[in-house]
Image (cartoon, rainbow, N blue to C red; front, side, top):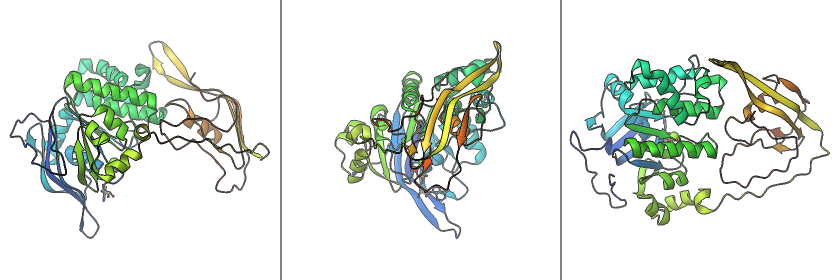
Length: 403
Ligand SMILES: Nc1ncnc2c1ncn2[C@@H]1O[C@H](COP(=O)(O)OP(=O)(O)OP(=O)(O)O)[C@@H](O)[C@H]1O
Ligand SMILES: [Mg+2]
């Protein structure tokens, strides 16, 4: 395992020669963004970081602290107004700080897999997901004849059930969480030497999250892949990383082994981050709020709604997938309804049917047009905090469940 220098007494990072054994080496990295008048605004300053094969480094910090900027600089994916202003980036011993587009592309393909933060930007909407995973595997040198097997393996490893029919679907036919898993499969396909995972599981429910993180951990130990996990979740960092780097306003404020950083943080900022992580602080207990609105007029109703989607043909013939089965719910004026369930459980489908963007296979949906006060809304709970005690104050029909 590579040892990163502790702060606040920084010592120079061991910068390797052509082969120092590190997959990634950042030394004194500075990155800035130019505004319209050409003025540079620093986003990352004086960042030192090394990652050895088989090592997991977690980069944590609040929103805007420079995590994605660092990842993009490593991957050569900075936007047009992004500039490397200082320091060096080496990947597999090669200095790529000022490498041109072609060198970076040649390097990125076989060496680096990115799990991007935004699942909507990473997929081609006009191409079946299997083709997109195959393309990544091919770039990393997988033989043409082995591509189908590599696609199924990568999709399975990313936690997607029924990989064969899923591979034949287009991104818009998958749920948000499933799309995220396809992106993870693209990053894993063909076994890259470095995986950069930018908030890899933030859009996923806890069960799938754990499966994917476990898989990434296995990959790191079995194949000596290097892993840079970017997360605002200190719980993830504590569980999975060999080394934690805490960023604030683009600067490292603390670094070290997770046990040290989390149990004895020196910096008040790290203490604040720990306080905000429910799994670590014991915070996050939610007191359910019961509101008596049974007498208020109904504004939305689903009655026994079932929704089947046709899956692409495979050898076994065409099949349907039941996304919702006999779901009934009522929303009254003044009531907030939280629709909760794991990835792919049908939350968005129920919402699309309620909004008449999709027709139910059986059952009915009705809504009353009403001038609602801003507090009257029916939407899935935006929170994905995994450690809530979840009880709800509404009593509609059965919960959405998988068929
Ligand atoms: N394309 C851009 N142009 C100008 N400024 C940018 C650009 N992208 C990022 N920034 C700025 O750089 C800083 C770091 O942003 P970055 O996206 O790296 O943060 P982050 O730590 O990944 O945050 P989050 O947790 O929200 O994803 C922020 O101040 C942000 O506004
Ligand atoms: Mg980010």
